[in-house]
Image 1 (cartoon, rainbow, N blue to C red):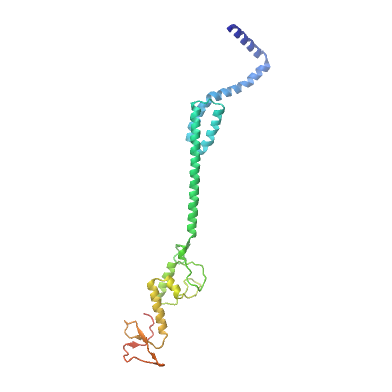
Image 2: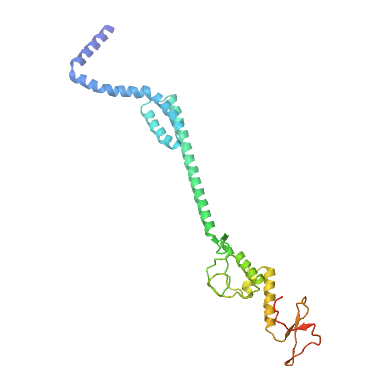
Length: 254
């Protein structure tokens, strides 16, 4: 039986080497067979190398490499322990990649919301032309109804301006605190921006000015007294008997 097999093998070998057509076809198949054998035996080792490389590389590069090699393993390589490990790595890499993308999207969305909030906050603030500070826009009010300027002076600066006009200049005709406008602030405008003490002082100055314009009004002669009387009676000035008590004068401020 064995002799018969060897005879047939010798006959087959002699037939192949004598037939050039078959010989050429076999020669063409040799590279393909070698490549297949190489892939079959070398691919597991290559998979191990790529497994390590895929772990070391950034996830964004590992993701396509992992699935590309997985395709080759399933197509050509033996499905053994290395293939299973690589498949597990591919799945793990895919999960990490997806989670990282979601986190990046959340981070980008958060940054976008943060930028929008910051932009909105900047839009809600405005620079005062007097103190040059960025102030909340609600601090800018219409100073007087007499004009329609853009609100460019903050409430605190308007109050400081009124206080300065009253205390330092003794002025009750307070004009609009911006160059180019001569409108005068009325009582309700002053009350809206001045502090309590400044507004009381404004009212005293206003009252004294009105009394000064009354020719029959007489102030007390005592410099420490801030009172006076109107002595108009029957069309003539009724002077008090004691001139040391009342004296008509030009002082209209306190």
